[in-house]
Length: 141
Image 1: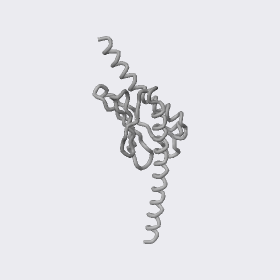
Image 2: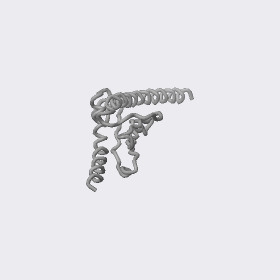
Image 3: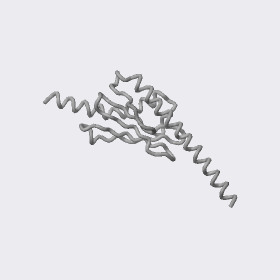
Image 4: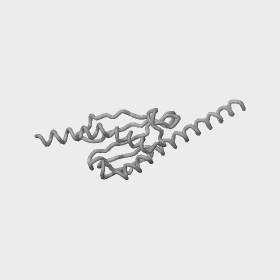
């Protein structure tokens, strides 16, 4: 009986340590986005909005919301990007992940501030292309 209790205790410690490490990676990632988005609000017309834990909410041009959501608690951190807009309702963005080594999509360290922000901007590219196409369609009508 003592052996299984020790085993459970060890498992609990391993799970806690791994979850704590992954929480730190998510916090590093999200804080970097908050910092960079705030610093470039006017340049890219995006703003961080108040949001719940495990989620960042970004507003584009005052009318499109992007929710950046941590959707896994254990294992790799999965990051889902949800677009909220009537005009862009069918637009889906590829999810990302942070692995156990702290790499975003297996290639960018969450410690790489420029890399993390460039990854975010790459995700926005699809949205900005769609908004631009809609804007040009309306302008030519």
